[in-house]
Length: 112
Length: 113
Image 1 (cartoon, one colour):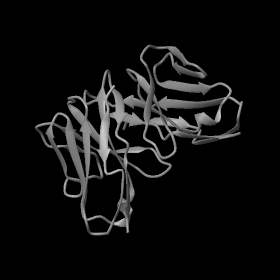
Image 2 (tube, rainbow over the protein chains, first blue to last red; image 1 turned 30 degrees about the horizontal axis):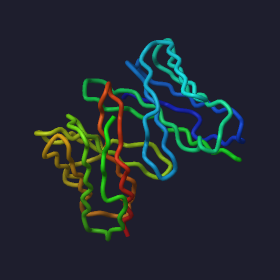
Image 3 (cartoon, one colour; image 1 turned 180 degrees about the horizontal axis):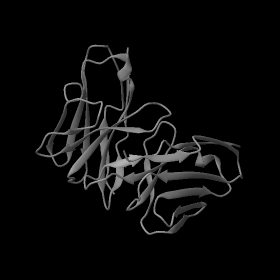
């Protein structure tokens, strides 16, 4: 079945270091979405990428959608303690039911 | 965006009992989704709830264990029936709007003792 892989599973960085998480789908996606879940919280929508090769920035966060629309990455420049949480990518499942297929998430810890 | 009010936020329940989780959305939505999330893990879809029809359950989840109601376009409930400690988890409701973006309730942290 359709799968979305995400690596790494965990990342521990010093504050100020950069961080990247990668997402790879087994099928071509019409779009890919990124979410952040703070410890004890619920997933919060960050961004949606739709176009092949698309790059979007949100302050220190850079999101990229691959040319083949099967992979994506999230890069955080100069991490801060407020970046702590788990980052999930998700892509639409097959069919028109709006179901999302979720990556396993990358848990980011930042040492101050 | 959508604002979803989910309750209870947490509960501790005895095994063998049932708990009903409610989600209220601030706008009308066609589909609502119910997820389970074990601590430190990804989201597992339990079922999709459509108004006016039976919910569609994912593999490994059955209606007898997780009955769902969807009486109107802004409200849904998920019941966790005949609970055992293995049902201890976080349960999340979600809606998909605006080109498929997902918005979540605050979650229900369930502990079964």
